[in-house]
Length: 198
Image (cartoon, rainbow, N blue to C red; front, side, top):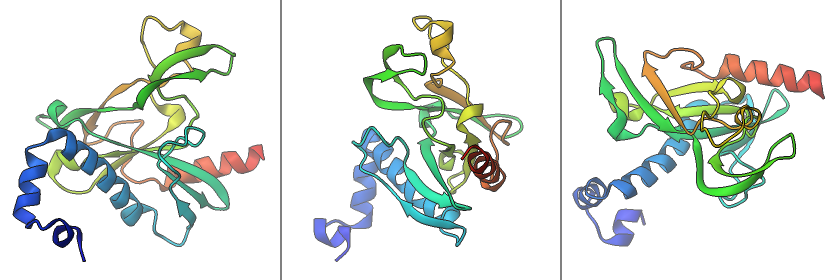
């Protein structure tokens, strides 16, 4: 029995419910994006032991974990904010939130403890940004964690900022660095660096 049968809804009724509740649409789109990312990009034979941990497990910050070329790797998925999207002469521009869902204390490499919603530099390996809202088709942009912009929030010291990712990031279509349309070159770099360091 599918979800529509279980809830006694027609596809049209579910569409109406989702379209009339933006917060529900955002939550659903986020989880569907995670599913689509795995199906489109992380289902090949080069990916082993692809798995998700509990969303409330703060010790494992990433949406997907897998072995790639024998190296344990993590990927975080984010989605465009639909109200930020603008059509441009060459394509689109928009922003996505690159932060945690709640404020929590984090310990930085220098020992500082800060209360923040920011994600940490190095907390995951690869970022995948769901670009569905640009053209109503499943496209993703990929970037390495280390190449993402850092927070500019004035309450953090310059040293703290270098360890905290910016919570709002602008992205364009066509893509511009550090974003790429496929993950494999970035994953190869991540795997090579991790192999050398181990």
